[in-house]
Figure: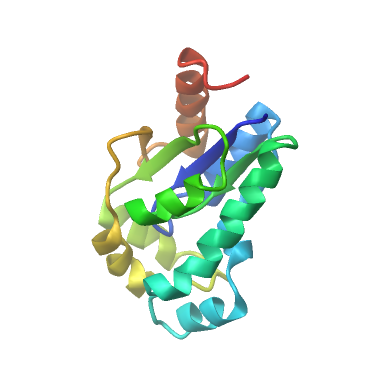
Amino acid sequence: MSRIILVCGVSGSGKTTIGKLVAERTGIPFYDADAFHPESNIKKMAAGHPLNDADRQPWLEAMAEAMSKWENDSGAVLGCSALKEKYRQTLEKGAGKKIIWIMLEGDFELIKDRMSNRKNHFFDADMLQSQYDAYERPDYGYFFDVKYTPEEIVDSIVKVLKDNNELE
């Protein structure tokens, strides 16, 4: 069974950038949680409305189902916000093995500034506060500050995973 690594955090924290780099360094395929959103969720966010738990449930269940397949294949690095504990619990139902949780955290103003400079993304920077409000910091996983460069963050992630025998 292959490993599932979830790279989590609020929008703009670098989940996709960091996740892709971790995938390159580990040889595990990368997937982006945004690809699992139904069209109705994308339209709602594009209109400037945050998702509620009912909106998120089918999205979380689709990823959990995919994780069980990835585990039996070559594993996965998944970039996914997973802000609340109940979301993480739904995702864990898809994994037969312990998920490796990578939590990207950072200063609100830094991330808001990054989001303001993003192009062609459906998430409005003004909704960032709702994500900070929803975030429930877990008491497990590995935590990384996004004030560093992507390369520095990935170096730290790979080192921690190797030091803790998390990579097979």
